[in-house]
Every structure is written in C-alpha cells, then in structure tokens.
Image (tube, rainbow, N blue to C red):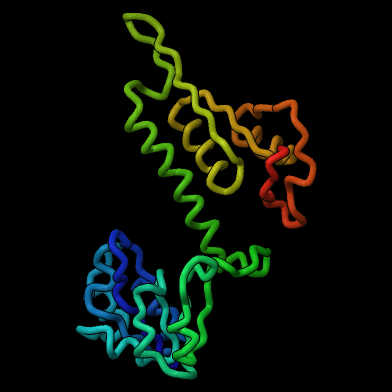
Length: 233
C-alpha cells in the first residue's frame, strides 16, 4: 500500500503526521511512503531523515495525493479536488463544525481521528488525550512566564518568599497534567471539577480539591468523562 504525507498548510501548524522513525516501521510492514518535501521541517525532521529511512520525496502535494492512504494532522491540508474513490484520508477533521462536502463528493473515505471512541482498545490512537496532555503542560509554562513573580517558595537573606497559588479548573487529562506541572514548579495548587469522582485523582497528583456546596449529579458519563451541565447548575 502507498502512503502519502502532505506538508501541513494551516498557518501555525508545526506538527507532522509521520516521523522518520515511523517510516521505518511502516516500510517493515510492506508499505511505501511519499513525503512532500519540507513536510517535517517545522517539527524538527529534515528531508534527509525521511530519505534515509526509505521514503520518497515529492516537491509538490500532487504526487502525495495519489497515494492509497493519506496521513495528515489537519485535513484542511488536503485538497479534496485531487482525491478519488477508493482513497482514505486520516487526520483531524473537526466534522461537527467544518463543511466536508468536498471530501464526500470525491468518493474518498475520511477518518476523523477526534471522533474515535476514547476506549482502552483505541488508546494508541487517542490523539485528543495526547494533545490535551501537552496543552495542560504548556498552559502552566505560559502562566509561569507571564506571572510577575516566581512559583516556588524560597528562603532568602531578605526573608521567606511564599509559593505562588495556582487554581486549575477541570481535572481531565489536560487539568491533571497542569496540576502536576504546577506542583513541579513549586506552586501551591487547588483544583476543581464538576465531577465529585475527580477528587481522588486531583489529590493523587498533589493538589487540594475545591468542594463547592452545589449538586452536580450526572456530571460524569459512563466512560468517566465530564458531561455538559445545564443552566440550573
């Protein structure tokens, strides 16, 4: 099977769908890969790194879009007018908010990775959790950079400098990573989540759970994720 990886065309997007190490793994399974030139540069992977693993480079996306399977980060990087019936596109599609009629008209099959069920069997394909982990980590680093003081408590010749106080709203994947990162930086951390069940998770990563005297029954779905609550709440 031939796999194509186009260069991401969305402004600010620095990720790439396939790394050189993954080229080697895919070729070992009998697949060939066509990588658009410069596709991995923003993620830190030069063209030669792909070539050394056996991928072929193409100067334009035209040849890439002839592949049987097209792997991308954001499907907006794929020109649907070049697709045909029988092809498969895999990437982040945001199908609940975007117009994907061009993909439907092409006859190609589109897999929106963000709609994959977040279950144990599909854990290796859970792009939302992977990105949420990075978001929680980065959010605290941005906060620390903007805060006009330091996070940790320090004892100096001029006296004791108290630790900064951090409040994390939401204790999902991103929130728990934010808590852990703030704790590592030395902050005193409090966290809140509409799910009472999240209290144990919050405390397990070293934060104090803020309990509010309001009912939040039904705030957690059968998979353990938070539900959207109504105006009464």
